[in-house]
Figure 1 (cartoon, rainbow, N blue to C red):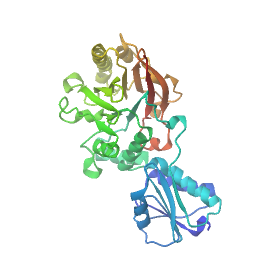
Figure 2 (cartoon, rainbow, N blue to C red):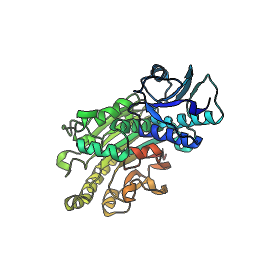
Figure 3 (cartoon, rainbow, N blue to C red):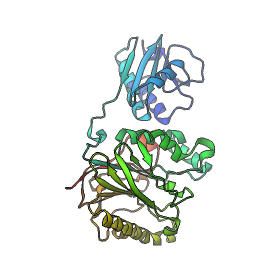
Length: 388
């Protein structure tokens, strides 16, 4: 059958990525077709994409292996489901390939995309993968509406995409910024709770309530792979130590279960240049972080450390010099050829490491198209090897 003999069905609340990928598929096939919502009555033959209200879609979604997609026919209709937004593009592109070859029914395809390229390889057992990602917050319902319009995806889509990205790259430690709780939840949920619910099978969050009891630490939460690491101690900067609740640092000390390797992970959100008060506070902020780092390294002299964050600082600024003072800290981004913050064309999201303790083997800024729909920052990760 030819694709024009079908009608295309998408979920009523489909993601931007689903719409875009289907339109790209049709363009590649040189056809123009109407795309309807699953709210329309069933009328075969259909090509149904995603988690729709069609019974076959719902059944396939329940049984689909992690990280996979399925293309299955029933009667004259074809159903395409995918485990997450990161494999949606590949699933929809596969449908295009099938129709270029004049597809015939029945179909029963289940595939797990091969992510064997360097950018998708998991860190080996000896390496430590550290990720930083700013999800960009919405302070109120107007801001939430603005972000939805700006990124062309719903609030929940943004969380789904970020969670899928994290589970795909599987870092040992994640530093998150601008992930909030309790301000936009009246409509669609808590950013922090929603994200952790999606990655909680792999990750445990560090609870800093005893240091910052009003949940203000949710601007800079950290999480770690509980299957590989045990948390030994942790702390967050208190409200008395910072000028603004966004501008915070917090950290944890961990021991790898397999071999007892220690690791220190700190995450921060640095002051931005929004007003003179914040600009004056920049060197003070990073000076206080420096004091904390030196205290940790004095207590754990052989431990590697990684400091993730939205620093709001370009490399080689006076404020970052305050952070690096009397340490071997340097940023792992120097191999990057692009910017982590495209709106102002600068690299302000860093992963700083103590270079006497670790080697940065692989650095990557994640540029997958979907990520551009979730934030004005680009996630980064680095694979570290501990020097012996």
